[in-house]
Length: 46
Image (tube, rainbow, N blue to C red; front, side, top):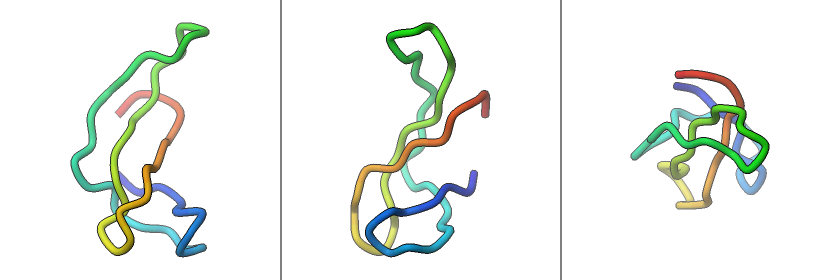
């Protein structure tokens, strides 16, 4: 899955992605940027 890294300011593949549920009940995908290691999120199902 592709997400936007705020630190690299580019679209990257999300490494170590996993599906999580946010506090408001919406699904999201959480992982890390493969270049800098910053945490990345993408809203919606995988």
